[in-house]
Image 1 (cartoon, rainbow, N blue to C red):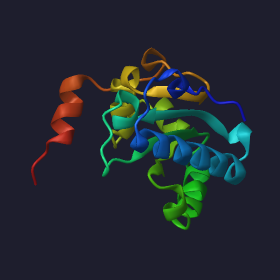
Image 2 (image 1 turned 45 degrees about the vertical axis):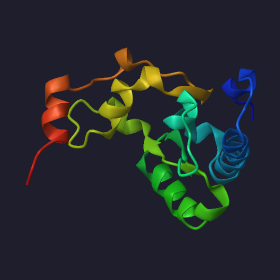
Image 3 (image 1 turned 45 degrees about the horizontal axis):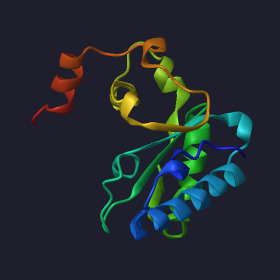
Length: 148
């Protein structure tokens, strides 16, 4: 498994960052032990780890993009039994088939693609938000803020 370790160039890593990095290696190893490589399209990290704004309460959001919903569900089931071992990292799998759908009823892929430039790519195919259908900003905003 060869991953892009963007954090290797960081100077003066904090204790929190060092712990997070160790957990990333554990989580990525866990991912590759649980799911065949050919079913993993790409892997991204997002959030405070990427921006170097972690606190003691922060987690590391690792987003494996998997080939389909069945693989995604398999990983979620395995992950749920091993959450404590992965901390502070969290594996938050997504299905690649959701990215290709033109009419999504759920906006997680849109949100991921909208913020893609702020996520750090570490493995597999590097995605471009131009390659996938995406709702307009106003549509995402309206759906995200519907008050029931």
